Image 1 (cartoon, rainbow, N blue to C red):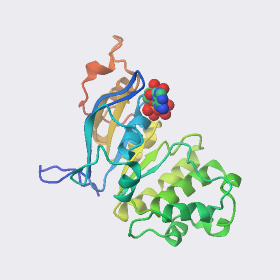
Image 2: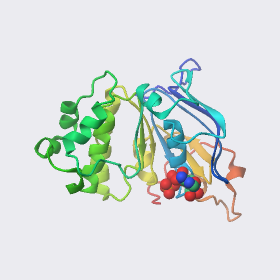
Image 3: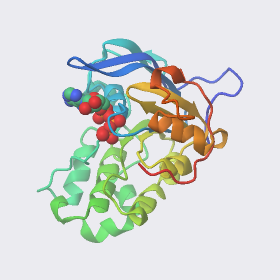
Length: 267
Ligand code: ATP
């Protein structure tokens, strides 16, 4: 269940304020703010190059922001090294999975367990979550399908016992049926007390899974709200940066328009 504060009393698990990030001369994020509450599935959507991965990686500590702050569990972690953030429970499943291809499935899971915090997730519990893994634990990661590798990458992150799980483009390159199977495991992840911040290019998928979402366009927030608040037209405008034919720019959207379900906008 979402812990989003409706009353003004709850505290976010993650709070990002006015984040600006550059890659060299390129300004990839221009003042992004967000708050993720315990128990939420917060989705970042947007087209290629919008800045979604940059935002997730900056939260994980892999990019240093030019300005702005990142608070986690009430503590400013903006300057904290990535491994310290992982130790505090911010764990990422990176785009492209980044498994060790020559290691077995089980050894890839052990990599995650090697820097684990105490918590409910063990290798055995991951094997319960993805039962097909039991028979395949000695198989090399490189011999697995994309969907299987994605599941191993999720399992590796889970055995580290995150409090905040960052998922970057889970569905990239996978068939819809496989994506649905992977997303079907999310309720069990949430039930174990993990909060999820994910990047998803497939808007329909994001809206099905998310309790809250934010759309980025060229490094700006163009829309945010709950899936129940959004319209297809608002999402399209936010995603592509156009409204009533006038070519609305990302900056002119300002960032806090509420939205409602778009029923299938695919990137
Ligand atoms: P995608 O879905 O294509 O990954 P995205 O929304 O995740 O898109 P980012 O990958 O964050 O977007 O990229 C935002 C901008 O920053 C893009 O213009 C991209 O080319 C640029 N960029 C990202 N990473 C780097 C990097 N390491 N060095 C230079 N430029 C980068």
